[in-house]
Image 1 (tube, protein in one colour):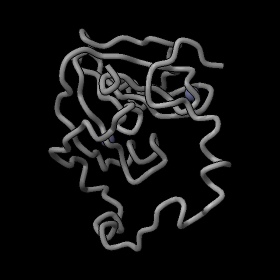
Image 2 (cartoon, rainbow, N blue to C red; image 1 turned 180 degrees about the vertical axis):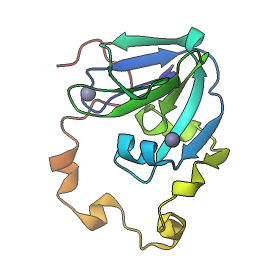
Image 3 (cartoon, protein in one colour; image 1 turned 120 degrees about the horizontal axis):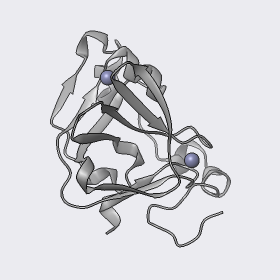
Image 4 (cartoon, rainbow, N blue to C red; image 1 turned 90 degrees about the horizontal axis):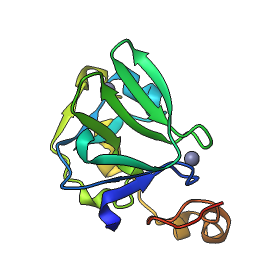
Length: 153
Ligand SMILES: [Zn+2]
Ligand SMILES: [Zn+2]
């Protein structure tokens, strides 16, 4: 099913899971900021028992002794984090084929929250077409589509 799959931007790494998504949160900790190159990490929990890599395998960086972080070696997309022994894997919400399937419940690591995070809802907002009319043709050509594919270059 479409909502139960995801993967990296280039399509070299894809995953699938059965059953519902678990707890979803934004982690603001400094490690998640670095790992995602962003304000933090939107993550959603899925039982490892229901989860499988369906194409390729992620690279792993152990950001601390008991924590593995997975990413695509080819395109750099952050894909997951997992504590050793945790029966759940924490998926990067943006890597899901349907990020809107997630319901965020909480924020953690807020001691490191960037000062501008809470100002985001008030920022000016444009669609991609408004911001850069050429983007539709230029920017979407190499990204894996938001569904599983039989073959992908
Ligand atoms: Zn990739
Ligand atoms: Zn974190």
